Every structure is written in C-alpha cells, then in structure tokens.
Image (spheres, rainbow, N blue to C red):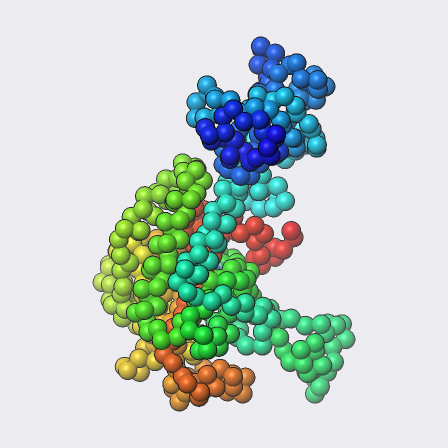
Length: 463
Ligand code: 4AD
Ligand code: MG
C-alpha cells in the first residue's frame, strides 16, 4: 500500500494501484444501495478524490456514516476508473480509519459560503477552503518560479538583514526594534537614550533590502534578496500590508533599460509558470474570482510592456479629458487612479513608467542630465497598479552627496553606502517586486489581505 497524494490518485496512471490516502473529508453522501461517497482532500490539488466506502466495512455504521466536513481520515483501497463526470478515478476503500472528528453542528465552515471578510476572522480555518488552498499553491509556485528564474540567470541569493538602522525609502514609516522598557526608558537630556538600547543605536524592521543588496552587487555582480519587509504606514487599502514579501534583484553594470528588460522578462516567466504549473487552480480563479485572469496573463506573455516617461504620462493624463480626484501636474506623484487609467484604459497592458521628478523620489536614484528627473521606473499592471518600483542607482559620489543633503539625510549614517562610490564605483540598477501584489494580479483576488497567509495591517495581528 503506497502512501500517495490525492493529486496523484486522481491521475489515470494510478488505476489498479493499492494506495493509502490521508486527508480531510469535504462531504459525505450516502447511497441507497448501502454505501457512502466520501469526498477527500489533502491539499495537494484543488479537486477531491471520491472514496467509495461499502456498508461491509467493519466501522461503516459506527463511524463512516457519521463522517462530516473536516474529519481527518486514513483511507486504504484500490484506485478504480470512475464513471463520474469530471474525474478519472475513484478509490474503493478496504479500510477507513478516523483520526479526528469535527462536530458538524459547530464547525464554522460546515455549510454556507462565507465572505472573505468573515474568513479573515478565521485565519486558522480559511486554508481549508478551496480559495485559500488555491492561493497557497499559487503562492508556492510563484516563489519557486522566482528562485528558478534568478538561479538560472546566474544571480546569487543574498540574505539581507531584517533588523536595520537605515531607512532605505526615506519615508520614515518604520517599526522600531527595541528592548528598552517603555515604562522606564533610560533618559539623556529628556530624550530616550538609545545608546543604552540593545544595538547601541536606534534600530528598525527593514523597509527594503536594497541598500544591503547594493553592497553585494558592487562586489559580486548580480544578486537578489527575497524576504519580508515592513512598513508602518497607516494605509488601510486593498493593496497595502504592514508586513509583505519583496523580491529585490540588484545588478552591477546594468543601466535603466537593462533593468526594464529584466523586469519584463522576469514577470513574464512568473506568469507563464503560474499558467503552466497551476492549471487547475488558475481555472478555479478564472471561474470563481475573475473571468479575465487567464486571458490577461496569456496576452501579457506574448506582447510587450509599454514604456512611457513620467513627463509623457502626465501629458496623456492631462489630455485625457478625465476628471481625476487628484489633479494632474508635473512634479506631483501619480495616484492609484492615474496609474490605473494609464494601464487599464489608455494602454490596456503593463506599463513601465520611467524618469520621475527628482523631488518625489529617494536619494539613491541616478540623476538624469536634465537635472530635473531621476532614472526611476515603476511597473504598473491593470487592476493592481504598481507592482514593481526600481531605478538605476546614483553611482557618482558628488551627486549622491548632493542628493543626500537635498533630502536632509545625515552623511554619517550612510558612510558605508557612500564608500561603495569611493572604491570602484559601477553603474548599477535594481528593483523591488511586491510578492503579494503579483499574487493578487495572477489570481484576481481583490484584497491583498487574502493573498498572504496571515495579514498584518493597522489593528490586525491576531494569528
Ligand atoms: O516602490 P518600493 O517602495 O521600492 C523599494 O522599496 C525599493 N527599495 C525597491 C528596490 O529598488 N530594490 O516597493 C517595491 C514594491 C512596490 O512596487 C510594491 O509592489 C511593493 O513593493 N510594496 C508593497 N506591497 C504591499 N504592501 C505595501 N505596503 C507595499 N509597499 C510596497
Ligand atoms: Mg514604489
């Protein structure tokens, strides 16, 4: 009796095998003919396998006839061809062992469909639903695809720190990491004395691994990080989390166009792998969540992204005749409504926006010859908006110092960053892809809180 997954038992090749399956009951149906149909799922695939339990089994009356959703079981039996629609196989049980009962009266997922809002309150149970099982499998597939892509391209995976002293994005939205007792902090001239804190200085959870990745790119060429990042901004939107996962490649000798080429190739590869490797789950999202997800991904894979400068984008928005909530003017940051107009309505495809005004972008972005713009790039996709933010980095020491002054950053805090420009500086570039935003885009899920196992947002960190 081989122990195999439900996914394997559902394949026609399994017919004739004696197998052991282990998982959870989804439904039980009793037939008049003196046997029961059990729908069994073990997480290996979207679909269940149908188990036929005959009344001749020793525990048929005492146990099998009482099975309900969520009960955990081991089933032994033979895989048979199935006469049923939409399934190649079924299992004729020779033994059904019950491990755990689930009181059908009280089990919250027993009956009706629950809203995604409700399921967020049950983060411990929602992985048992079809939707959240499918999301977990797609998220796993995307993570594997990301590593495969960079490994095949010769990038080194660098583990950048989670605790840091520097604010990469300069937005000041950082969570403090401290062991100081808030009830009696050490004071110096009326202020908390962080020299007495654990790290001897103020420390935070990282908002980005970029600055550390640059250190390694400037020594080893092409690197990437893939880890959790944290933002303490109070954004209660369907696209923001306080804790999210970011993939950040950083490449020496890459200019902005090389960076755009890499980003486009990378996203297409991830989309193609999701379609190829998660067919059943993608069909589920297409049927149940958003009936455009498959055709959208298919179209993107075979066409090219639109590349537009910020200045041209402002022009397009200004001439669109559209009334936006936030007015459009050169020098202001684009809002979600502007980004979505460009990618969803105007170009109807992913858009790479580049060369943003220097005043609205971080200190590390390379200044263009016009002195007004920097070599930034954002990748926008329909429905989600920005999924990638990146840039060519400022590799000229004097310009970098000017930019740091401009943004009131203390040179002493970034001395190691500026030394990279002092010793063998190189043109280099990189970007950050938000993992949850890409999963949202692939699955069509509307709220980012539903594509991460345990969402962290303002006021929410229970599970
Ligand atoms: O545009 P961001 O802030 O760029 C950086 O952090 C750069 N240091 C990256 C780099 O060049 N290495 O963030 C990058 C991406 C965004 O495009 C978005 O997809 C995602 O990270 N992101 C968020 N995802 C979920 N919740 C949030 N609060 C996010 N903030 C950014
Ligand atoms: Mg950004």
